[in-house]
Each structure stands twice: as C-alpha cells, then as structure tokens.
Image (cartoon, rainbow, N blue to C red):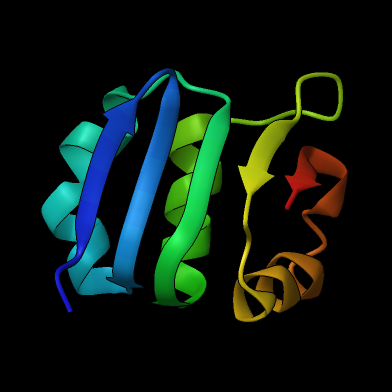
Length: 92
C-alpha cells in the first residue's frame, strides 16, 4: 500500500498505513501543516506513533477541535484509548 500525505482544499489526507516508519518519513510535511481537517477514508491502519504524530503536529485543542472525516473504526478506537476525543470532531 502506498503511504501518502497530501493536502487538498484545506484538508490533510492520509492514506495507507501510518506507523513510526511512515511518521518519520513524512514528519517534515506533517509538522508544517496548519490544517484543522483530516481525511482518513483511505487509511488502512494507524498505530500509536501515527496518532501521536497527528496530535503533536496539528495541535488540536478542545476549543479548536480537529475535524476528522471518514475515520476508520481502528483509528477511532486508538483516539478513544488515548482519551483524545475532546480534541476531535468526527464527520462521516
């Protein structure tokens, strides 16, 4: 699977699998991103490093939540496990 990070119409798109290796490879682009919308419909799998990178890079806050579009159940479970739901708003 091709792991990609792209930006379209003010939204950050992640696809493929996001683990520590992919995070390290794409960290520069991710950390420069100032967007508050994340599209995950093409995400196949994410681990704790991927979750941490998203939160660290995009810096959502309860008063300025990150809009997560088409979030896979596996990613939702990790966001919940790490008690990050107050920083996120889901849209299907």
